[in-house]
Amino acid sequence: MAGHSQFKNIMHRKGAQDAKRAKIFAKHIRELTVAAKTGLPDPAMNPRLRSAIAAAKGVNMPKDNIERAIKRGAGGEDGTNFDEIRYEGYGPGGVAVIVEALTDNRNRTASEVRSAFTKFGGSLGETGSVNFMFDRIGLIAYGADVASTDDMFEAALEAGAQDVESSDSGHEITCDPDDLNTVRDSLEEKYGTAEAARLDWKPQNTIPMDEGSAETLIKLLDALEDNDDVQRVASNFDIPEEIMEKLSA
Image (cartoon, rainbow, N blue to C red; front, side, top):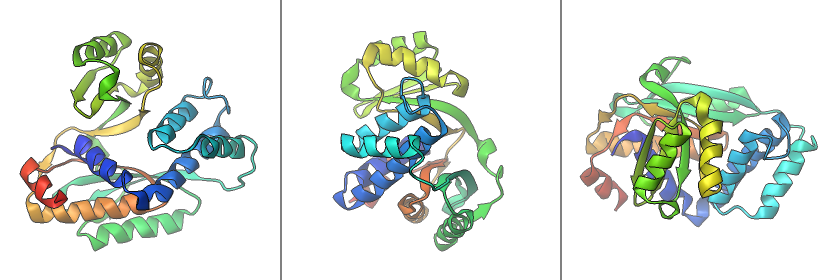
C-alpha cells in the first residue's frame, strides 16, 4: 500500500490506542488554539478552525475541550506563540519524508526531529530537498457510510474535485489547494461536516520497501508522530500488503 493512504492507516491504529489519546488530544488542542488565534473564532467564517473542529471530533475529543481551546485562542489567554515549520529529509530505504510542526521552540523541535531521523537510519535535509517529489493537494475525508462510491464520485467532481478514492474505510477526495474551501463547502452542504479537510502532500511516485526497511521506517514515523510538536507526516513509501500484515501482527 502506498505512503499517502498507508500512513493514514498506521496512524488510525495508533489513534485507537487509549495510551495515545492524551497526546493526540494535545495536538488537536494546539491546532484549535492556533486556528482561533489567527482567524475569527466563528468556524463558519474561519475555514481552518472549521477543519480543526472536525478533526478533533473525529478523534472523539469532548465538546468542552474543543470549546475551551477555541476560547483560549480567541481570547488571547494562551500567550504562547506557535510557529509553523516544515522539515524534509530521507528515511530508511531512501523514502522521502515531510514533517509539519507547530512549535513554540524552533531549536527544540529541530533537534528532536533530527534525532529521530538519525536514530532510525534517515537524514534530515534542507527545506525543499524532497517536497518536489510530492504534489500539494487539498484533502477532504468522509466515512464510508455517508454515500455510495458512485454518489460521492459524482458529487465531488461536480464540486470541483480532481479525484476520489473510496474504500471500506471511507472516501478521500483530493482537489487543488486553492479549491479546498469551495469543494469542502459544496460537499458539506450535501453530506454534512467532513471528517477532515486540510492541505496535504501526495507523493508523485512511491518507493517499494523490503521488510527490514519497512520496519525501521515505521519506527521513524512512530517517533515523529509521538513528538508533541509534530502535526502531520507524509512519505512516499510503498509497503506490500503481506509485509504490512507481518509487521502489524
